Length: 440
Ligand code: SAH
Ligand code: SF4
Ligand code: F3S
Image (tube, rainbow, N blue to C red; front, side, top):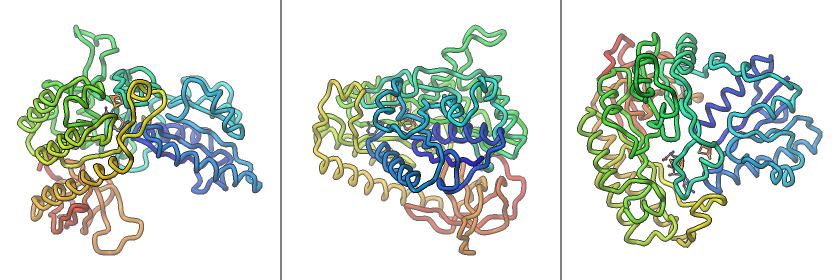
C-alpha cells in the first residue's frame, strides 16, 4: 500500500507528519510523490492564518477532482484545521474519509483498516530520519491564549514529554545518523512545569535540565530549541546555552509588536521594557548569538504610531531574521470575539512591505559582516540541480543557510569561508572536512 502526505504549517506539523509516515512505514507502506499513485492521501493542515487554510482547501478540491477521475485513494485531513468538533467538517467535506486532530492518528489508521493499534504502536523510537537534522517535540500544546492565536484551541493544553522518553528518541535518531536536533515547543521554556520532580530533586525538570540530560549523546553535534516565550526565558536557561558547547547560540524569541498597548491587546503578558531586558540579557551573555523574531502587523486597532513603534524596534535591534505576518482574523479566538479587525487590507500590506524592506537592508548588513569570516556549517545535502559551482548547503550555528563548494558529505561539520554575501544568501568555500572545534 502507498501513501502521500502533504504538510503545511510549523515545525510541529513537520514532526507530526514524520511520525505518521514512520507508523505507516512500519506497517509496510511506501511513500509516493504523487497523490494519484497513493492509496491514502493525508493533508496535514495549519490554521494560523486564513491563507494557510485556503491552501488546504484548494488542495482538497484538487483531490476531490482526482478521485472523480477514477483514482481510489482515501483522503484524511489532519492537523490544526481539525478541532474538537468534527461534525461541521464532516458536513462540509463528506468525501473526506478521516479527520484527525494533531498527533491523533487513530482515525486515519482506522480509515485504512487498522482498528486497534494502541498507544504502544507509536513509541518514541521508530522514526527513520530524512537526513542529518531532526525536529523533536518536547512539549505539546499551548496555555498562553494570546488573543489573536488559534493554536491553543487546536493543539490543546501543554503536555511535556518525560526526559527519559525524549532521551530515548534522541539516542535513536543519533544512532541513525542525525547530527542536529531541534527541540520544539510553542513556548519551549514552559517545558517540564507539568512533570513531577525527578529523583533527588525538589522541582520539575526545565529546558536547561533537559539540555544537560541530552548533551552527552554520542553523534549529536548540535542542539537548538524553538520557540522562546520572552516572559518564560530564564537566566538559568540562557546560562545553559552558554555553558553547553553543543547548544547553538540561536534564539527565536517572538516580540509580535513593539508597542505596549498592542501587546496588551494581544495579551502577550509582557511590556516592551520586559522584552528588551530579556533581549539584552541574551545579547550580553551569549557570545556570537543570533536572535530572530516574529512580528504581526495590522493587529486590531493598530495605529500608524503603534506600527511605527514596531518598525523602530526592528531598526534598532537588528534581528538576524524577522518572520512578519499581516494579522488574519481567526474565528474562535479572543480577538475575533472581542476586538475589531479594523485595519484595512491595503494598510496591512503596506506595513508588511515596509517591514520586509527594512529587513532586507538589515540582513544585507548582518550578512556582509560575515564576508571573509569562517563559519561552522553542518552539511545538510546537495542542491538537486547542482550548478557545479557551490552545490552543497547547510546551516551555521546561527541557523543561517550557507551554500558552498568543496569536499563534503551530508552530516559533516565543515568550516566554510564566506566569499559572497547578500541579504538573501551566503556563499563560500569549505576547508577539507576535519574535526572542527564545537565553537568557531
Ligand atoms: N508560539 C509562538 C508562535 C506560534 S504561531 C509564539 O508565541 O510566538 C507562529 C507565528 O504566527 C506567531 O509568532 C505569529 O507571529 C503568527 N500568528 C499567529 N496568529 C496569527 C494571526 N491570527 N494572524 C497573523 N499572524 C499570526
Ligand atoms: Fe499562540 Fe501565544 Fe501560544 Fe504562541 S504563545 S502558540 S502565539 S497562544
Ligand atoms: Fe499552524 Fe498548528 Fe503550527 S496552526 S503554525 S500547524 S501549531
